[in-house]
Length: 204
Image (cartoon, rainbow, N blue to C red; front, side, top):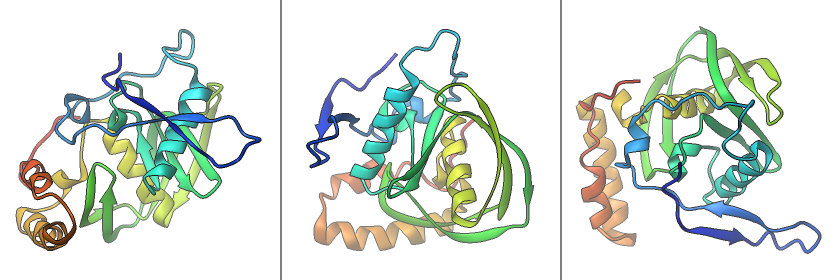
């Protein structure tokens, strides 16, 4: 079920709250990053939905993200979390109902550290998802929240955002990243990411 063998404890620095386990992120080339994930079965849940969602939130906070999907941590569960600060929601079995408008804005991903790409997405979305209790919700999101939902929904379908840009746009983003990584990071990371170019096609 899981390829995440190393679970570490996240110290919330709050003695009142229990420590919530967080996960390591898998490599962007991990098979689960490129497969459509199966529906989360609330009648026979593979994990405790509340506990798992809590760990996703703490992991997202730990890496300073605005969203995180289960497969980014090596788990084959159709669930992601989005939010910031103390305001996160867990979306199990998310679905896109309708879209409005269009926006073309910079976007990043925890699986591709510091790689910023301009992605065109709907500006407003109407969506459906289940919460930790399996209750179905519908919502309308706009702006950054809509973009985060769509980005994580792509992860649920085995798509990474690098496949949504043209080759030249991808190369431009990589050149900017290379300058940063030459100065601050191990260049081996760049080689791993080079395989994800704008021509890459994945099947949802």
